[in-house]
Image (cartoon, rainbow, N blue to C red; front, side):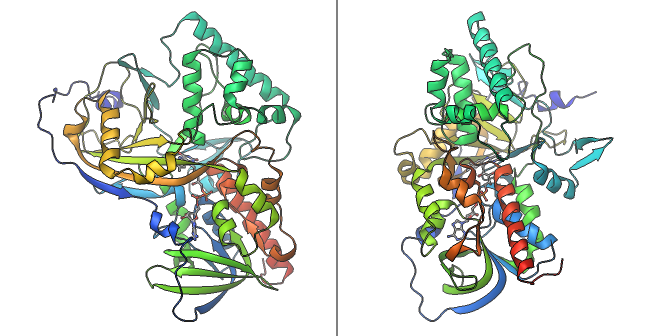
Length: 532
Ligand SMILES: Cc1cc2nc3c(=O)[nH]c(=O)nc-3n(C[C@H](O)[C@H](O)[C@H](O)COP(=O)(O)OP(=O)(O)OC[C@H]3O[C@@H](n4cnc5c(N)ncnc54)[C@H](O)[C@@H]3O)c2cc1C
């Protein structure tokens, strides 16, 4: 019988060392920097804008905005509109296509929800992925990441898993020590995901220092351990251990299944993934919205009214201004954008934004015509990481494909730039060719025939991709105030964005949207606007 493992294995392919180089096409895709810049150079309206009215206006169509829209839709609220700057909703979780094949433009996986993530689990149940049987939640195998999940290219070969394994006794001892410290911290206070409730004294101590400083203090100095922890932080938070707080570093493990040193018993984190990444989820959230979703609308100004809000948005295709008036408004925009567009920003917003540090990211989708030559060791996995690389490795969009014949696929390469001074300016200034060469050079180390098999490279750039949890972010009172109902001028406005947690993952974005959606339902009920 042919096993899945054997089919994905590529080491039997002939060497292509002398193949002539082909022309590789591609360009930039993803979020448009020009649209974002309209916020600074506001386009002038040539005539009075048409005024449109609705009960609820949602500004921003990322996961948080789409989650809020789901709450309204399911509660029977019909009269709402969602305004999204790009031509497609989904934000950092948008799907793309390279060479005609689906691939992620940003987010690419969702861990199976833990105990505190009921809202996310409820979504997965609605989508037919999660099912409760005999008191246990099970997940549809087709959406769970197939094995092998990940591998690491180190010392000239691939190993299974991302924690370096060919290491000496002193490194193993440090793995065990770190594992114990995570377990101790988990015992002294909970690390819920998404964030909820209290902020324990032990959290405060971790939040006060960088992860690197905390590791130093704990005597955790082993280079292999530190590389791995730095990789995890760059992957989830956009910057490494020298930038993120120790609270964030510990939370990464403590909010899931801890850190397992080799030989320790423990459950592995199962993840859900799709060829188009979390775009699969975003598309399912946006499809039912129909004409209530207005893409290509740049929200330029939000002004409070005596009753409700007024929102001016630039209609990119129509080249004209629209004016919306709504009884309730959900601001599902990154907070630095919200602060720019709100006419008199709430004090907490003005205080929170300067304290946030946004990490830029680059994401390259590499279309290859057939499987790649591979180095020795562990077989191809969904997530493939090169030890010591500047990038975070690549995921294979074809990994869940059960077709037994070798075929074209897309490899999505990630690079977080939150550690690099001037990273944002360079991200935007570098020409596409320079990114193409960096990606191909990095991945040619484990795959020498990559250039010969590559047809196209598309690069998405995110100048302000995500808030990075630096020391003090968890304790940030201004963020906490924005998570609560607003009063005074802005009492009809509710914030919803992953920025409110100080770090960005699906669970946080989705739950903020859920909370804001329910706050609006409460307000509409009080105003007698809805029956259910
Ligand atoms: C490269 C990358 C990889 C990631 N990988 C993962 C992953 O694998 N798993 C995971 O859980 N998370 C991942 N994330 C985190 C991801 O950010 C969250 O999962 C989630 O998508 C954030 O949703 P959000 O709604 O909070 O924010 P956003 O995605 O920022 O949504 C905000 C929306 O507002 C719109 N907008 C902005 N300005 C305006 C305006 N003026 N008018 C109208 N609309 C506007 C934007 O276009 C966007 O659609 C990744 C992030 C990045 C950048």
